[in-house]
Image 1 (tube, helix red, strand yellow):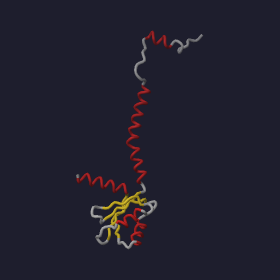
Image 2 (cartoon, rainbow, N blue to C red):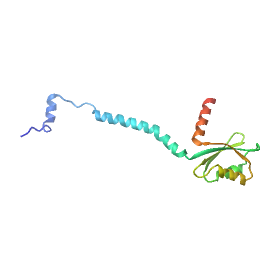
Image 3 (cartoon, rainbow, N blue to C red):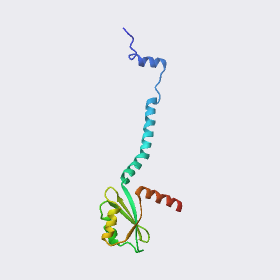
Image 4 (cartoon, rainbow, N blue to C red):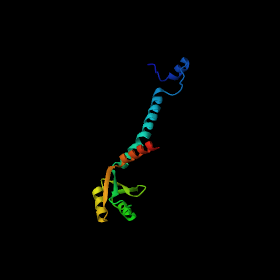
Amino acid sequence: MAYDLEKYKEKREKVLGVKKRGISFGTLAAMISMVIILGLGFVIVPKSIAYFNTRHLDDAIYKLQNTEVWPQEVITGIEQLAGVKGIETDTGSSRIVVTFDKSITGTNELNTFFKANDLKAILLNQVGHTQRLHTIKQEAKFEG
């Protein structure tokens, strides 16, 4: 009859004084790996979600040719156009920043809207929404 190692394992460990202490190396390695993966997840996932939410957004900065302020009914009309996500005005209300989804609408549709309302609006700049937010953040850092 062959000697069965598993049958007498506990007795052998008791005689030799082998004591199980702490956690095994595999368990420790798994716990450290989980901490690293979860830590990276907390850093990367919010940035990825923010990118996917703003990847189709562009900002167009408009100014009226004459230095008047923008009429409120025009601003509400622009907000109702398909694809427009938001409008911001500057302190004097002489410029507006139209945030729009470039997969739905574009500056051509905005220009058509201005012509239909007999406004002479000048497109000062068109820039990606994320880039504009980054520029605003950098300017705030230099100012304050």
